[in-house]
Image (cartoon, rainbow, N blue to C red; front, side, top):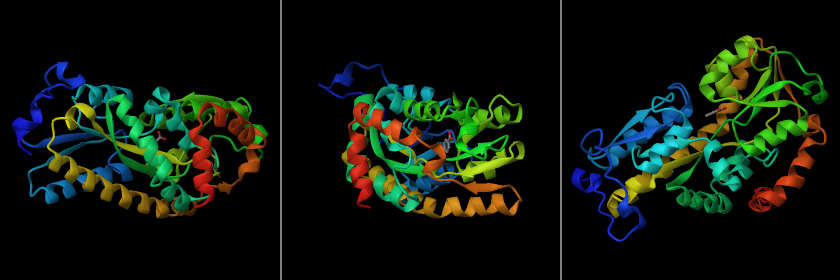
Length: 327
Ligand code: BEZ
């Protein structure tokens, strides 16, 4: 990519042409990607794989520098940087996007899919692609969906039945649909970002958390817990986005090259997640930590009540349900 082409903001005639000049790039042909996960997490490994793929596909012309572990700030801050053109790309959870357009949060509907295989296909499917296009209205370019492990529940004290969760502070991401689910369960949903989780669990700020097996093992959260409910109750999608302002400065060829490299990387990531849950669940169990499988009935009426409300609020949900039923 020609550095001069890349830094220029001459988008004649577009609404973006009045925007202030973009800051200098980190280096010739260097793009930056931000994400909140630690280096050990699969999203961070996939971002590194994307960097290698881009370098190879561009013959070394495009370098991608990976900024993991929230080095560039929280997701809210990264979203602002993307919108301003100060950050090129990010792998984001749906938290910030759902709070601007609730349709995105429909992907976190409880028990929308049966397993990771179905989640993988749904996130590559037609309705997810429609949602991806909505990122454009937020000043982003939706590049594709990835995912993390299915959501499970890690608890400081055991909860033999769902009623035992009444009043407990359960960590969620700040996303209306998730908060609503936990309220309906009778718990006190407590939104916290990933980097805050270890301390919050260790010092009793929360009684439990909605998390996956991978994070539970890699960040050793289970050391401060006594039971894990293997509930598989939600997909946890990741959205790969580019900055709309940056994209407008790229040549068609470079956009196509990046699109292709991201698509391959996300396909690989989604496939990897079909295996990851089982691998990390086994590690946790082998360490002697109790993991108990529960199904939809554990949350009694909360799931049905959730659907009654969110099918109305986010019409895309029924299309996702119909698509999932055919997978
Ligand atoms: C979380 O906030 O639980 C999370 C964020 C990114 C990847 C996986 C989990």
